[in-house]
Image 1 (cartoon, rainbow, N blue to C red):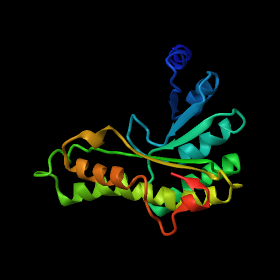
Image 2: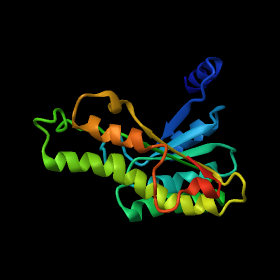
Image 3: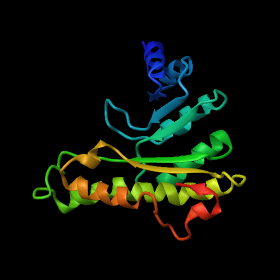
Image 4: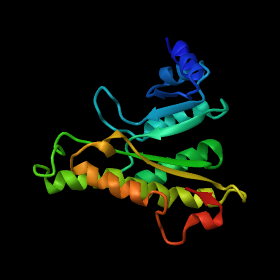
Length: 193
């Protein structure tokens, strides 16, 4: 029972993220005490990605006082701009830009066996997508009133500790996470990472 899981997490001092992919799941999530709802653009039955999922479901949560997370599918500048704009269109502004990168595909099992193509795909998701979301999200944070214009949070998932080709990429992300430089450092203008 979703209500029970949300309450149990709260009892432990945790704030659960309730993931949805359909209108029915969104309505169910909104009927709980959940404060964070993740809209997964990836259909977990077919594994197909459709960014319209976030665009379609986000407005349903506009007045619910919840934080929304757009999950999966940001691979290009067009994708990043589209998801950032969908959030701004829904809420009128962007307050937090949270990027969680981390894939570990089966063809990335060992540095000795991983192909250059598989390695590049991991780079594209784990580094390029974070760069793109920052590139197109930070300008919206800078539009907010100072001094606290918003936050940029870049994290790596559990694959950061795995000993595959992914590990090297994760180390790069972790080492640069507190001083990623995209031209002028945004912290000087009130955006914190």
